[in-house]
Image (cartoon, rainbow, N blue to C red; front, side, top):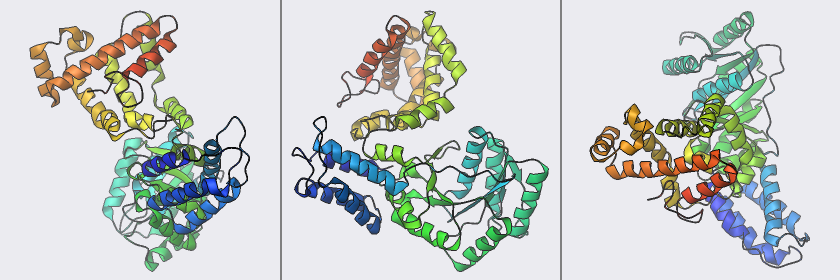
Length: 461
């Protein structure tokens, strides 16, 4: 998300010249560019007007200290206003009610609502250690009930069965009763989605809301619909007392207009964002971290949290001991690293959160995309256990067999073996004295050509 906006703003904010203080003259052109960047990102016009006015008000007359450039001072102001537009801080769910805390999920059909119910259930189970029950009151689509049941089984949370012959209110009240008797902490109610906002839908969800009195009413909206997402959220907010928004499909939205418009238009915070199709791809929405990402400064805090959550610590310790004891680093270990990286959104998911990586060229992005990781994993899977342990035995006929088995070319196999050899050398350096410094130098050499270090690279040609 925000790729286009980030690229445009990064170029624009570097162009402020002059010394001493920010004036109307030296920021005039930059403000025009910021306005254009926000328009291109499909941010709602009232939001743009207010944003630009606030940035101008903060900037004009601001003294520039000797240690900073005017551009740096202006970036700080823009960052602060971006945070403010999105809500300043992450607003968490309020689950302090007597169990079960009921969460009502609303949204249009196709916005990813049912998947978001499962993602949220998984998040609350794993991160908040809650016992969660889910129920569908979508009596118009039997497939929606079945979908939620399948997802609930997949993530191992409670599922309360329902039927299209029942009334939504009856289903929800029976689910609350079941949750009380079976000591569930949270009940998430998935409601019916429609193709557009209509009176019948609103009346039904209003009645349901009154009957079950949820502690949280979350609206699920597709980020790819841009400022329309904010307008749809407003229509729901006028009918229901929303407590927050879940912004879905942010991984497919390069513009970011929805994220910057929703808070202003609805007055309600974005609490979570869906960052991929996988069931674990849900992140709390932190305006300060998102603002940092928009300005190409990365999001190291989210990356650290993700590593804490998703890296298998026992496996990492075992590998560290193995490398330290001099037993080396095998292709089996390399594959394990790729699998763990995939669980964190792949190489690009990691790179997007690192400072200065937002403006990578398309060529480098292609060399680091998920396809590369999947291809590398397929090549290693096509090897025998002996070949994974001793890659030096992989010669002509073996290479042909591995390429055929993984649906790749012999040059792809050669490339992987070359990358693995570099990784092995890096691991050896790491196990010796001053290991970390040596490893960082080694990693620089493994970056692809194009401004992030030299060499033919880990994902090089």
